[in-house]
Image (cartoon, rainbow, N blue to C red; front, side, top):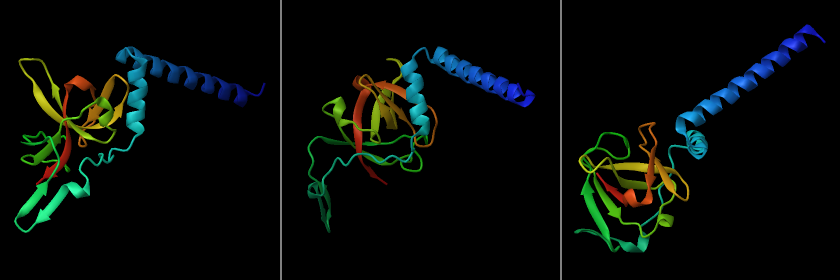
Length: 164
């Protein structure tokens, strides 16, 4: 066999084993093959996903004296902010929230508010849904790389509007 061909085959085998070892190491670290696959999909996905349209045009009424949104169950809150959703959401923005009726209401690209932490140190986090499975939602800040794995019960709201 040609020496160059033998070297090529050895390199091919080495790269294949190295790649397989890397995948196995990643799976071992995550302890869950589904998480590993989802992380790969998220890394390849676009970070500028658009949220769902929660408020129809016929529910927004603009007058000289103000704006009225005729949508039931809309709440509002002020962002304290860490910068994780910059430039879209900055500190002191007012967010309009909607309580989702089921986990099927929440789509990839929607911005959600969820609870994170234990009962002594709970925080409300505002991040974008980048993937979902039957059991979990995966969300991250537009300005960050850390992906949060969230159960539906921890999701409090879907953001339906941002006021600056």
